[in-house]
Length: 578
Image (cartoon, rainbow, N blue to C red; front, top):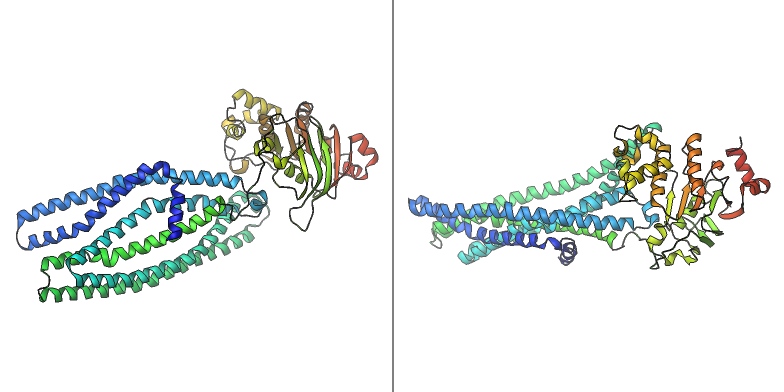
């Protein structure tokens, strides 16, 4: 209970701007609860008047019951449900937005090692369960619980023997419902973990469907998916089995207890302890006390268990319990020219293997620098560290003579653009993909950027032109078109440092030549770093750095390196000069 109250307070912080809706909900719940406690007394009188031919009194009581029930329906449907929907909508929105922001702050290493399904489940399903518990789902059960507890108190006032009987029955059924909830909750934790795995595999199936087909891996992938779906459904079946077993036991006991209640009421009437009318009123409380109260307590406890599980899963992200967050400094630099330096930088994606080993180099503003070397020597890692996607293990990276660990996020990432070999294109229109980096983008700026990236002619041939939806991960675009769209996106950012990581690898020779001209036009305005296997991309760089064994083994122009560096000569022979 302590944990539940603590979590309710935390979740309420995300919905407190909708507290008016919550308070109106509470008013409707409290008023209808009080009425539900009193109502059985009126229904008992209704039966007595009916059997005694007191038609006028019967009509008056019936009208009162009608008005009361109409109010309960109105309060439940209008005040409670309408306000609940407002509260739920706002609270879920706030939770999901906050969670989305926190996911974007998670350390890249943790993201690399975590399935996307985990974040999907927590962002969609868990946030909904958290808000629903405070909203209609939780309040509806509380309404019934308080009403039925009130009914139990009413029996205490009317007749102590029946009260004791009801209390004994309630305790027995509560214990059974509590055991059911506990056992289902234990299995539910396992079920959710399995659901996350299935969600991740389904996501991979959708995003990787082309590769799965081309690899002829349908069977092996489906075996893996089937295995996880089977395990997920086994856990669902286990929860169902627990539920079925307890429902059978509880329903049997309910029938037995109801028979006992009838026998007790007959005994009390025969001994003139209560009248028939009082017996009817006491019997009318039966369904509320002996059945519904236990079911609602059980359901509420189950909801609370699910609520706490969801809170734990979501708050573990918000509170940095499970995933580490990126850290930035507080220093902000306004005038970034594009000077940076690696000093004795060592880094590895795991502790057992170094990718960069005591690397040193310096790049001046507005230089165009190429990086070459065999696959896996650390070229892309240089870019990742410079953008602070990962943090160095030792040494330091300086931007404008300031350690990037001292700089805020906007100084670093607001002044760098990286164009990767496989850029991620969002399932939006071409225009909206470009507006992600410049919200106030004009049509003129958009067309200019696409013209520089040699993409304008292709777009103009599309039926919806710049409003064309590109599909999941840009599925309707070729590899070269994706890279050109990413290049257009980069041009719009107008950052001082532009990083090209194999950004022209998927372009044909003619398009690559045009992109190369566009890059050359930026040569004296931006600091440009280029990783390329197609060495024609970097021939005109101010200098080229050869990366070997996690170090810069040589620096020079194309002419200097081709004359003296064996590694560079070998790369030229195999990848360019054929």
